[in-house]
Amino acid sequence: MKESPTTIQNTDGFAQAAEVYRRAKRAVALTGAGISVESGIPDFRSPGGLWTVFSPDKYATLDVFLRDTPKAWKLYRALGQSLEGKDPNPGHLALARLENEGRLASVITQNVDSLHQKAGSKQVIEIHGDHRRLQCIKCGNLEGIPEGILKSEDIPSCGRCDYPLKPNVVLFGEGVRDMDRIQEVIETCDALIVTGTSAEVYPAAGLPAIVHENGGKVFEFNVEETNLTRGGLLSQAVTDYFFPGKAGDTLPEFVNAVLRQS
Ligand code: NAD
Image 1: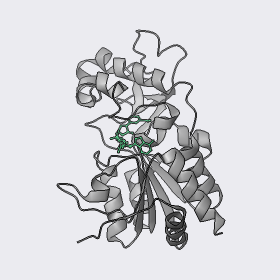
Image 2: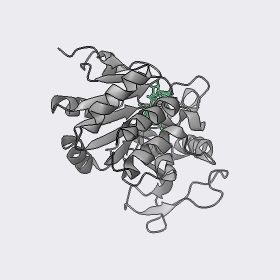
Image 3: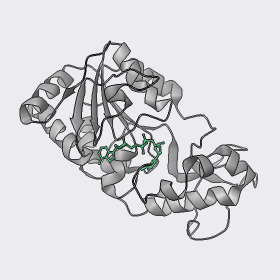
């Protein structure tokens, strides 16, 4: 049975957790929609957010794209517009700094907003794809997003085979991306920063448990506890250190504590 996580709320706590983190040979981060909330992009749960208008199970599925492509494009347009002009916040910048200082091997993100790359992270694995390109699910072609497409009613089609394109994001009902690489990264990591994810969408939600079972430490940053912190119906608690609060506040403080001890 896993013990309760240590909740970190003061400078001494940050220093102690940072000391443990620094002993890791290979640290990795797993991020979700919550890290981008402070950049103005709502997560699945924010009241009034995109996902309360476009319920993911009614719009973001492969089945809907195949049966009713214009309906699926309504969500893609709204999502694309909600990502336009957004900038990284101190949480993204803190992870980029950690990587640049040699203290973070890579970021596995569930986000499609490219804000980690914009912040300067180089090793970013986008498990749910990206919203920078359009994808043809028939021939595999990837294309840039044509000018004006988010404002028009047209559905773009593949330049190679003419099949309707969809943004290069993973829908419910599709396989996730780069799973072999993610498996390798997770199996060889002994410290995992988890931030801004409710840990409800699999397989990403199952990655912290692998690190925990291999004896690694899990550092979780979230405004509220999750299945990782307290255990869920099907999962046990795996978090070792829980940092309550906004990632834009807690991550920079943690990174400062890690680098202060360098
Ligand atoms: P989620 O919406 O299920 O959960 C978000 C989590 O972030 C919650 O646990 C919430 O408590 C936490 N959170 C909210 N604000 C925070 C903050 N300021 N600091 C720290 N934590 C905060 O998100 P998920 O687990 O990533 O799963 C939802 C799916 O939807 C994923 O595939 C995700 O990529 C996708 N999505 C992506 C974006 C994006 O690209 N920015 C936006 C919405 C949804």
